[in-house]
Every structure is written in structure tokens, then in C-alpha cells.
Length: 188
View 1 (spheres, rainbow, N blue to C red):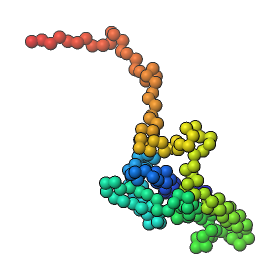
View 2 (tube, rainbow, N blue to C red; view 1 turned 90 degrees about the horizontal axis):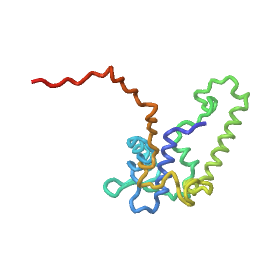
View 3 (cartoon, one colour; view 1 turned 180 degrees about the horizontal axis):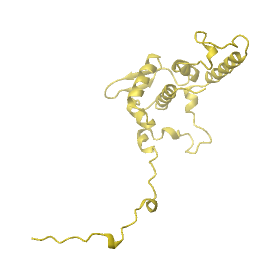
View 4 (spheres, helix red, strand yellow; view 1 turned 45 degrees about the horizontal axis):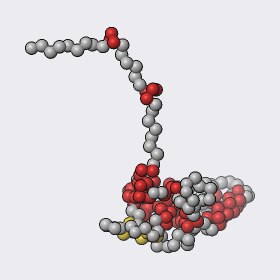
């Protein structure tokens, strides 16, 4: 099972908003897009859906931004994933309308996968946004800090730059002196 990019970006936006709780200025779509390297227009659509779900408030204009409407400790991963995933049909027989399996009614695959999916959501229903933002004790950064969000206001600077190729490998050999054309003196 794989979550869609839509769900991934929705979770990132919600987590970012939760991590910015208490800031003087709420995060903006532009800030989140830059921090994660995601299209601004794509995140704008996601923000509208998250607002329609009642999870965030959006304020336009100067000083505007996104803020959580529901406390991070009350919004579960299970709730978000159920709302943002459009197709939870693991196998064809989950959908009665399109099922053409000749083993339907005789095979136990459907029941086994249904139980597994229920277990998946049971775990996710016990995890909140606040749980996702709790610092890891084994993290490489300073204790209590969130390495993926620090510093939020300098997120664009935190992205790794592409490594430049080694100059010795890229350098072009110089042309031998004999093959160079001599400069002609100007006449006249």
C-alpha cells in the first residue's frame, strides 16, 4: 500500500502548521512550498481542501497565513488519511461494482486484507499530529529541536546544494602551443 502524493503533502502542510503554533506570523503556502520544494499552486489546492475539512484556517493578505483549527493533539493520522486518500481498494474484490474475480466468495484474501487495513487504521488512529512533532531522543540535532523544520524562516537555505564536479575531472586539456593561432597585429 502506498499513500498518494496528495496525502503526503497534506500531512506535511498540517505538520508544518502544527510546528509553527505560537509564532507571531502563521506560515504561508509560499513558505511551506519553499521549505519542502513543492509547487505553490499544488499546495494552494491542498490548503483549500484542508480548510474545507475544518482542519486549518486560511487568511489572505498581509499578515495572513495558515493555522490549525483543531489542536495538533486531537487530529489523528487515520482521520487525515481517510479524508485525503481517494482509493483504498487494495484488490479488485474490495469494489463490488468492478469485481470480476471468479474466486470471490471462496477465497479468504479479501477478509485477510480487510483485517490488515483495519489494523493499519487502528494504529494511525492512535497517532496525532502532536505525536509526529515530538522530538526523537536519538536525533542527530540538538535535543528538543526539529531538524526538518529548523530554522523554518531559513528553510530555503537548509536545502543541500548540488555538489560541484571535481575540477580535475572536468578540466579540459590545454591546446598545445603549436596548434594555437598567433594573434595578428592590426594594420592601418
